Length: 273
Length: 314
Ligand SMILES: Nc1ncnc2c1ncn2[C@@H]1O[C@H](COP(=O)(O)OP(=O)(O)OP(=O)(O)O)[C@@H](O)[C@H]1O
Ligand SMILES: [Mg+2]
Figure 1: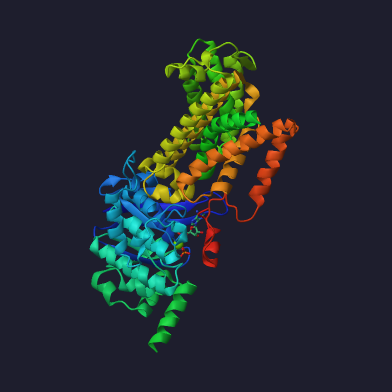
Figure 2: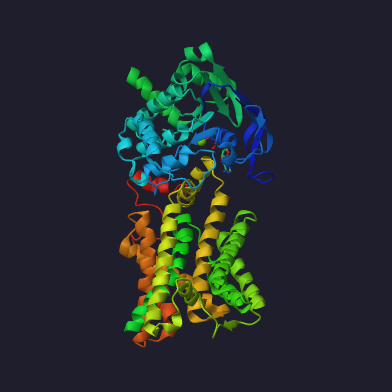
């Protein structure tokens, strides 16, 4: 599906602030993969997704999508094949436009836009159907401005928008991190549902180790711009959170430096105990 | 008093095209397009020059509007291709236009006295000889013609902004990054909007030239602030409840603003103060809390949203 060959990304090159965000990444995402990505703060996870979606350009290396070299393609030319959701619920939707207008924009993802009516009855039908899957009742509020929705509702809408036109690849960047626990659970359930029913190839960054293990068929761990662990199949399925943290220390030579992950782990252990 | 009404309506309708253009760029696209100050006199100068060259008034007005569109394209290309800051791009175009106008007209102003004007020609097309009309009937005919034109522009824009292509304009003003991630070349959207908006502003200038019977390179001074004042008036009085209200509102705002100016003149208020008064009023309105006219963010729903709004999506 998509291949990254020796991809490197440097911010502020040749200055004292130089950051090597991606350090010679090689990754082959296969059709049907659901990859979860974890890693310490600043490991380069977000940068990896941005480089794939075209929101950032690479300094070195090549990207190919279904055999086609897309290294030089700007984001809007890759959009037909790639849907991406950000951690910020405000980033994926247009606040002053209605739900149906937002969906109409997503309906023609990557296609030519002409002078046809953006919202007509047949499209509305399709929007209602797609929204009904969120189970949030959004299908009854097609004309509501998106700015009046809660963060969770907006993220659900963003998810519907990202998947409406069936992209080849879905990129999720901690898309539940800014939500309260209940909304986060709903969005995760919706994500799993959409990925499964639409059979979407997916890469999902998460700070929740338990999510990283529970979802997907493959797990990638990043540290300082490198992929330090890539587990799939049985090996991933058998893994537990403490084992994962151990593997991280062994592979990186450091403790897992992420407050949120540690807190969540402690919290889970307390719940278990 | 009747003159106040006539002048307010005529000027308000003519500047209504400009208000629509300013609404497109400033409010919907979120692009502070200063080209307007150059496009307006350019529309007038182009029309006047064309008439002097022997063009009929109707095609001459069309040429004026197209010259405006070209100026919009210049600003748009500077911004999108050469990455010039949006305000600076408008300033550069405006400055260039000044020279182009002098060069085209050969002098700072042209009087079209004794030339057939746009309105006479339109009436002639309808089988009406304007020579036979009383002055009053002529003034009312002009208002009717302008009204039909503005109404047509309003309806066309309302339709266009609801098409797949038109939707991208509002989306670009709302959330540029999202639009790009949905496969739209945002630069093209900006270019298209600037062309469209400045076509309207050019048309405004062309019609003003035909109504007044002259063109002057200085015609554009202060028109942007006036247009912004009209747009604000429209939004304050008729709200941003819906796109339809927004479009109709700014035209009504323009009529109201021009009406107030005409009233001021009739009351013999010192005209030289109007621009300063307008500027101060616009400033006051913009600094009033909770009147989000050019601030496109809706009121935050919660503290979390308020915090998030300070994030990078601005
Ligand atoms: N636009 C940018 N300009 C400069 N430096 C950047 C930019 N984006 C990311 N970086 C730097 O690149 C490195 C990787 O950042 P990235 O956002 O990819 O990390 P991350 O793994 O997503 O971290 P987190 O878990 O905190 O979200 C960091 O050191 C960051 O400071
Ligand atoms: Mg990140």
